Image 1 (tube, one colour):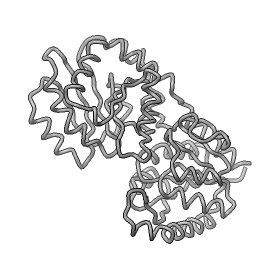
Image 2 (cartoon, one colour):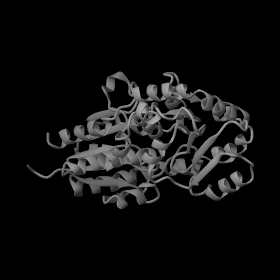
Image 3 (cartoon, one colour):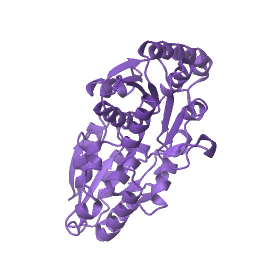
Image 4 (cartoon, helix red, strand yellow):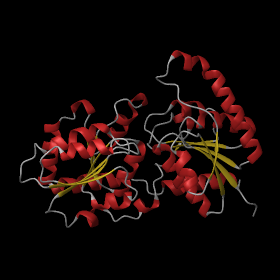
Length: 363
């Protein structure tokens, strides 16, 4: 059987890169050579080589919210990026090109189409991004993390969003939470790979509004840039809550296993992880996300009884304290929400996306 190769395009944020890494690992297990197309400035520049994959880069960045000069230069920048990606693809000759999102997928996808290489795309969010809206016209296959993201005429397959294997292996909510009726409420706070400043600033003060009978243990991921400030914020308040503060949590399986409920943003990867694990959540969408897609992501859980959705403008100290007090009293509600989240999970997402790529490579 001839050796096969797949070029994966993903970059910018963890929401694109981590699902793509899960697929890359699956393909590597099936003896497929994986090469990555990304940028020098994105999170992929650190994560991808560390995982043992060759990273090839092109120069490209986003345009939304940029000044007029950036827009005037955009056609030239995109053309150069397409040409560079085209030469990379012609030199590598992959059997399949998989676009998992980020700025790099646009020129890379166009280059794959020009080179006559099968192009597969995957949209993680519940609202279709600009890049995949364009690439859907060129792609041989389209996949989506949430049902109904692409228009019906695209005939996209709802695969779910790939997540790391160690989260899939965690016990279900009934096993994890059955002995947690008493004792402190375990609150995990995560704001994505960069942290969320609003949580770092507001949560410490919210704890001062809790009744003394409410016991909460907190594990808070602050993000590297906000770690020192968050420590100062917690040190400035008087609380009986036990708090662990980390700039970044490497072992998310351990964190999710420890937690009873999660306070977090509503990026596609976070939503997928919450569902895969099966855990209750308070979702505060990032208000400046493109097309407000995080609010739409969050509604997918909240409308199905799996999460509480709070707009950032509604996130007040007293309101958060009241929510935490309520969940501390009603542990059965946490279990019901966790079960609802688990029912929305697609634990086979990595395998499904990977198998589609394998099928294309060996076609």
